[in-house]
Length: 337
Image 1 (tube, one colour):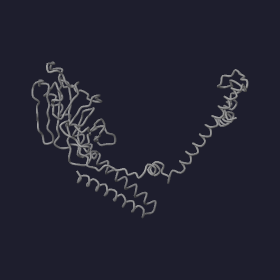
Image 2 (cartoon, helix red, strand yellow):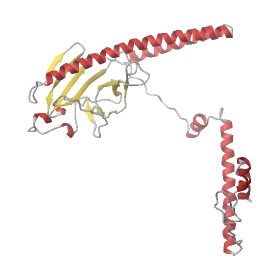
Image 3 (cartoon, rainbow, N blue to C red):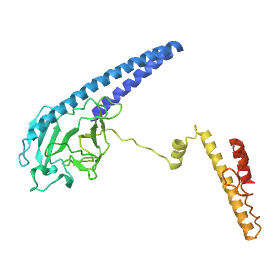
Image 4 (cartoon, rainbow, N blue to C red):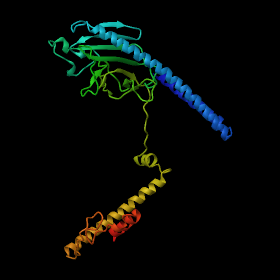
């Protein structure tokens, strides 16, 4: 695992150095020529990336077509199997495949634990049972993808659950998770992932952790597909904080570059405090006048409060509705007066 990590880091370092050398070459050229050379370099790099994506896309399509053909053959054979019949097993250079029928999906393999909805009584009719196709991979068929953690310790399985008639059951967003790799005691470095064929910006998919969890006794999953457990040998990132105050100032506030933002925030706080205090004082004066019976008579004008004043104390500047700036300024002034 560590060797794979070092190889990956060396490759990234080489790519960074190559890009830096190119930038030095461009800096030594006149500006107009540097722009032309940089554009040509980027176009060539894009062509290389497109060619790589196309090659990966072809590999992914071959894997998908092979899987469809494999599943079709297995389903045809499952039509002639009974529930009590032992599962069929075939060993290939890349995987071992099992397929059959069962009333208890947890009995398919000692690495699987299903919730009760995937178990029917032993005396239930055959048509209530489940058909399945289960694969244990010997090799990582998605080894060309860089989305998995670096390392050589990998286990991958595929499980397709069907009705007895071989109609697929959509196992997705299960409220009670299914446990895979239940026979393994996974350490914290064990990373449970599934192959997402529809991952965006990829040639044909990528490994994803969505919907899976390593709880120490295998992988809990809410959906079924190609599921793998990887040993993540990458060192965790360490956050060093001398004090809470220094971390806040250095990382969150970033005093060196955010002085203008700090000034604006301070001004907003000061204005808000002043306006709040002014409103509080006005409210207290109004209450005091009411207690002393000094409140002015309230005269209604019969307006609707939208286009004309309701009373003589209505502060809205209705006469300035067509001039937004004057309307806001005069209304604000009357409120403060």
